[in-house]
Image (tube, rainbow, N blue to C red; front, side):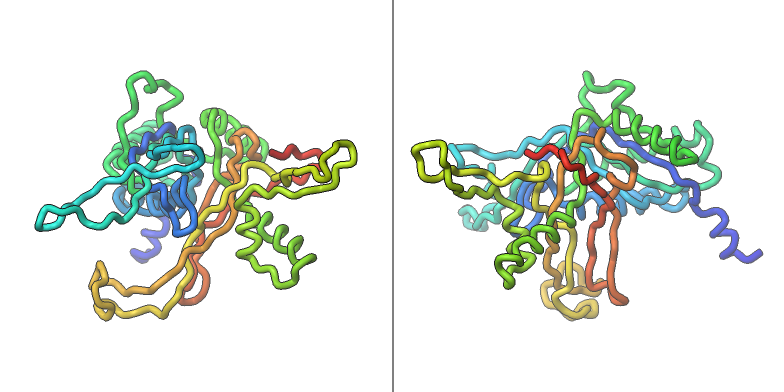
Length: 337
């Protein structure tokens, strides 16, 4: 038997679910793209997943495939004056003469969130004692990392309960058992809201807009979905000639960045002046945007509704996109907000 066959046989192959609940993050990045602010982009969480796997190393016997995010607390560091909000900013570092340098605006937010990770375990990590040791190692490693640019903070003493402890469970066999396992997992994430993808809404809005304006673009549809829209309709019951109404929305819909698309060819390492890393090839990119929705975890039907994974398209990987397979049920009496 070759060494390659041995390595393949000893690779992580058994699916499991890792829950890291009630993670407190201080001063995470709240400006995730040039056009949006608020909750960090999903690229930050997929990057955390990749960084965590690299820190643990192959000897840990665990591989990460996808991540789901449930937010329990969101506290932007802003000053509010009526309808205007301004970020709390710092002036650092000072220049050589003691004067303050120009400010590059940095939005920060304090978060409390839970992470659900789809992982693969090696054969020797399937026992209960081994899984407990592994989840302790993962939690300890995460405590020394950055999450979306913010610092992972220790849990508060009053929150250190059984429900706040990380768990690593083997994926149940059979659809019914797996569905029950997922419902129990989501109950531990309440109260909170899970971020899912709603690319379907973007395509639907584009098709509806093109019925009246054939030159409407995806950007027009994205901007239309990103705001509250009001329209006037005749009011035959009141003295006022018009009645202003707000368009219904299919839930808590938000614009989100979902990845990057290439703007240039791949430049060899060291050929781009002032690059941060002179030893790595470089490509200029621009953000990709789509629509997301915040959904209560108890409304999700299966683990695929929650998880986000990376997709790199093209032979030369000219696009990096965060994908989610959430499939909403199309109910005639679906509640709107």
